[in-house]
Image (cartoon, rainbow, N blue to C red; front, side, top):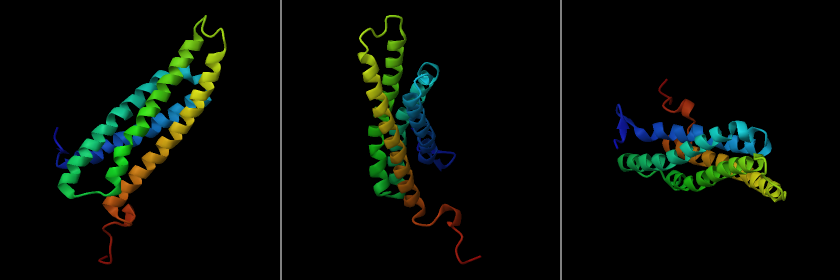
Amino acid sequence: MPDTVNGLPLHPLVVHVVVVLLPLAAIGVAALAVKPSWRGRYGALVVVIAALATLAVPLASSTGEDLEHRVGDPGVHAQLGDTLIWFAIPLLVAAVALVWLHRRTSRPAGNPSGSTGKVTVVVAALAVVVAAANLVQVYRVGDSGAKAVWGNTPAASAGHGDDD
């Protein structure tokens, strides 16, 4: 796979897929967890978004390694980026579990014992925790990436020194 598109490194382009889809999936999973009536209507969409985000994470890591060979070690950003898949996978599992449990309990003879309801509550609670962890980790990875590129200089003032 090429590591540039029109001379631009592929990594920043791919990263934006993760930066958009993973938080969107996390918000979607949290919404499904707290609003059970949305599971049937939006559950499949959230699963698809979570799956796409999860698939994009290794692609972002791979393109990041390609970029690292060109510009040097980004430090903690690479280490944090490598951990993101271990947040995305549980998010995808939580999305699938919420939708699967919803479909299972929505069947006519779905839950005679009532035990599935307790399991669903536990899965929903865990889903909210996993979603929150994803949001925090995406922020940490992105912040470390911005610092690797811009240092401690805010992006808005980078390149605008005393030469004005």
